[in-house]
Length: 255
Length: 322
Image (cartoon, each protein chain N blue to C red):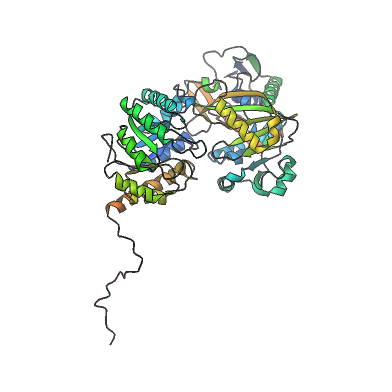
């Protein structure tokens, strides 16, 4: 699997916010086996003042995917992306343009506009979007080479609210890497996303706020692998009726 | 002669423990008055190890459970417990908090009304951590510095420490690897109309808040944790979130005066636990994070035990001084 030409082996991406301590975060990153961690560049730290914490993140050896979490306008997101590129020396940016402060759902109009500006400027954009197909197309036109549809609102842990829409997205964009971002609460949610052929899962709160973050990170990693292998093994179709698992023909005859 | 750099919370607590063991102690402090350059002046002053366990390692309980007894010898400690409540919309936060902590009991709306009449009818349930306490951080810093001076400790205000000291308690100024700042923001409200006698914690997935009564209608509110080294004044976003959380706790606080706002940098190590370490012949006590008043006593005892090994029997000493 490749994101913007970079070969990635782990299909689990991990966010780095809300952990009890950087030590617990480091432990969770290790037990998840993730290769990519997202880092929020809040306005408070955009001047580089988060350096102490970022040093902890760099030490994990993971590839860093900075994000524009909490940005509510195109201008804010673009400015934050530029700061992130300077600070972390990467063209990657997870683009969030939040449209509503309560549901944190993406402002897809602002998202497409910001994606166009950033792509033209050489950024490799990971857009946090809804499961809307047309928005997905517009993002690809704007220069994105992958899409990050939501499972449910950020931090809600509701799992996949609309699996049919995600399935349609998979069918509509067979060759575009799709990463389910946001809403994953439990390992079964991650497995479900992977079983339907999503390329990867990005989650944060489900691990950070678990009683044992490292334990949950490992559980999520196993769920992602199980879901992916299940998808690749081509699962059977559901049926309404029972089908005996032992042959009916040739049964022993009792005189 | 033992020399200490920094007359903040850690430095003064260590001076106290060392003086208890009969040592001659000199403390160097760049600031002009007790605590005025200490980040502890922005602290909540909660002695709440059981609540803190929600997001901290188990050591906060083992190290912090005797803090209120220690402080009670120095400054008024209000042993009123902590009440934890959640807005109706986020009630699922209460059972989660209860699962991650101990030392509490569930209280009904009626119990809440009896404990804090101002909260009558506002929350249907809460958690009561009866064994917790709070103090006034600035008063505690003043009382502690007066106490150690009474015990013969010399504090040289307005005096930078010499190049080499026995014990370094300079917080973020210490040159320790792995030490990082965690910014905290707070406000002090004054409101005569709302009577609250104990620490309240409002659980909220986005903006958890604590409110600590300071007496005479004053309340300290705080709760932000930002991974940042910026010590600029409190931001509008943090302040508006703190104030709206306070309003959610009690609408009567809408009429409060905001008498002060502040921001400070808490020194922390990667595990958010304090640490004693030796570097080039100096002992460092640092990384008290958001647990200064809670963990300084136990850490100061450990520091004193390292510097004056012959009197490390804490229990024996506590019996003597009780």
